[in-house]
Image (cartoon, rainbow, N blue to C red):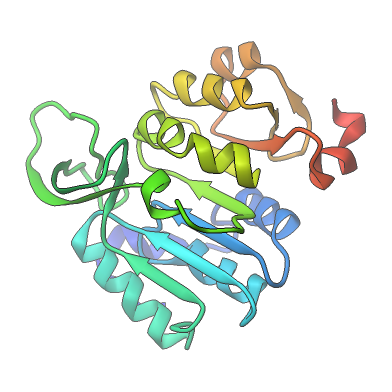
Length: 227
């Protein structure tokens, strides 16, 4: 991988988000179509591309332009241009030419959710409902967009109901509305050890990630004892 800022070298740590990697490996398979929403410089994008192979597709969304440039470079370096589509857009509730992206203290923390006392830039915005309006397959969505999950999940409600992808969600402040939305659509939740989670437990305990499984999916059935 090509790195930019110093903090990005944490990807070289042997155990970088090891449990998230294991969950991704469990729920993705060859030929799958998936979305990496909040792709940063491509760590998980490259993992997904390796798993899905040439018959699959990875749509990688990254709002911060410097990250997106490195993401494209890493996709090219690994010869995944035919598998990965990179979109330098901020995922939220609507599609628009200009949305404010607030810059956090590191390259991992940019967000369309308002940050106090921080700089901002303008980037294109995209709704996943618009982006995936015509697709017939979407198997897996990994989403980590610093609190904007509360906008992104409701905006793709039609696709979540119709296509029933597994959703791996990082929990940020304000995530309750996104989790409730998924629950209303018939999703059930497990943690990264594949143990069942209730809505109250997700919100009351220090849980960083959840996996949302569509009711009746093969994955939910395979984890039946967890529920």
